[in-house]
View 1 (cartoon, helix red, strand yellow):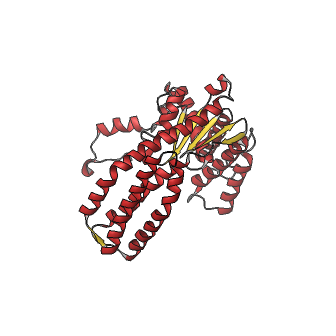
View 2 (cartoon, rainbow, N blue to C red; view 1 turned 90 degrees about the vertical axis):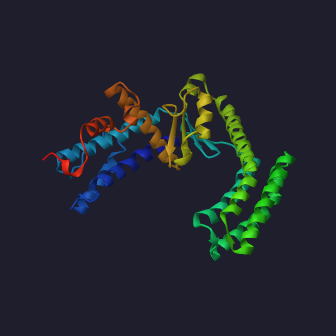
View 3 (tube, rainbow, N blue to C red; view 1 turned 135 degrees about the vertical axis):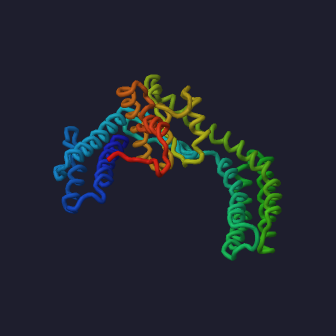
Length: 337
C-alpha cells in the first residue's frame, strides 16, 4: 500500500540520518545506538521530538532536529502527491489511493529486438576492452557460450516476431553474421581491430533499425497502458499526476520515458511533474527522490523565490564568486585562522 511505503520511507530515512550523522563521532557506542533507535521509534508519531536525548552538543542537536523534521515534511508531501507513475525500463507502476497497479507485459517483439542486439555488444565487450591479440581461455569459453545461446535464440525470435516476417528474417541474419564472426575468433584464438571494425560496420545498419523499432514498441506500450489508466481518473486527479523515472546515470539525457511523459503531460522534461531517480532501482528510493524534489521546490520558493534554487548546490553561486576573487596557487593560498 502506498501509505505503508511512505511511512516506511520516513522511518528508514530517520535511521540512516542518525547513522550518517554519528558515524565515527560517538565514543559511547551504546548511547549512540540508543539514540538512533529512539529517533526511529519516535519518527512514526506526528508530534515527535527529533532532538537526540543523548547528544549534548546543541549544534548537533539542531542538525538532528532539522533532518528529522525534513523527513517528516517530505513524508507529508508524498501522502498528498498521488497518483504517481513509476517507470522502470519497460514497466509502469501506478500508485493511487493506497493501491498499486502494474502495467501489462510489453510486446514479445520488443524484448527480442533488444536482446538480439546485445549479441553484437557482448562480442565487442569480450574483445575491445582487452586489446588486440590473443584471446584468453575464459573469454574464448564465453564466446563459445554466446554462440550456443545465439543458435538457441533463433526459434523464439522467429515466434515473437511472427507478425512481421521481414523483421524476423533480419534478426536471423544478424544472428548468423554474429555467429560466423564468433566462430572465426574462436578458431584463431586471437583478433585484430580491423576485423572487429568490419564486423561492426556490417551489423550497424540492422542495430540502428532495431533501436528505432524498439523505441516505437516501448512508447506504444506505455501509451496503451496510460490510456487505460487515464480513463479511470477524474480530470482533477489526472492533473495531479507525478511521474518518477528510474534509470542509470548515462541514459538520463534524452531518456525515452522522460520524453514520452513530457509530451503526454505537456511539460518540458524533468521538473515538478517528472522526476528522474538516477541510479535508484527500488520504488522506495524513487519515492524519496520525488518527495525531495517536491519539498525542495517549496523551500526554494519560500527562501529564494526560485523553485529550482535547492536543486542546485546551495553554496555554488557563492563558491563561484569566491573562486573568481582569489588565486589557488599554493604559496599565495592563505586560510582564515
